[in-house]
Length: 370
Image (cartoon, rainbow, N blue to C red; front, side, top):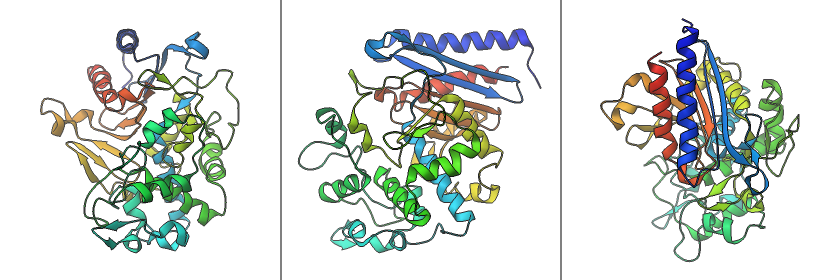
């Protein structure tokens, strides 16, 4: 069902204007990306707008790379799925089977009782372990790591350091499997587990298992590896409010939970590989849909988020329901099965950690009328 060319062009222009006006009207937005693809509708639109580079003097292009933030959790989860298919790990395995004693010690203590040995792989994947989140939580004393990113921009964080920081400064939220609490700490642990099983560094595993097989030529792990083909453009600028943090070494705080640099086209190839079962089998992908309730109308599986929009607002059509993942900087990568629409993009601004969802709904509403 290919849409009439003139109708498609009108919709394309409308989507472009929605994106560009968003950037023009918000002083905190400096650049934005959006890719829309549908095989059924016969469309593939790739937009970029705003400015990037030193002092924001370079027009942003669709070839610019950018931080994908927590979309990286989907990559980590898929790696676990690939290891599962090789028989090297099981979702019900205790994590202590794969982590050293110093990491496991005092990892999860709730109401004075240690639960570290009860945490399973699946608990880390869908945030039901109860482990605190080093990335966003505020300790009883001192600054959050989010604040330290700004106040200590030259500090390089190792994954072991972020895990230790969580153990030293934060408390567990509930026993394993007894609730939901979003935890980047859990994904740092998963990264170490992948390294233990493969006896390779996480960035090497990403390139060997995902980037190279799918032809993601511009994707790599920040501070750890290089892309197969270097982009002629710098990384698109990333902001925490009014602060441009693009060159901060403190962004190393994000590793297995989101330390990947990519492009919209590369992310499209990745999510399409999930839809077409190119990377992992359908049975494995179905296991990743072990949904835990994140919030009203939002569910979290193994590195996947699922939106049931009618639960958020009853006037929204369930045709817009989608799965994929988002990041705290307004990055997003989703597939809407009912419309057969892939929608991928980024606002590169932490103020859009939630705002980007409204934008996606607006774009999907335009597409639903085609």
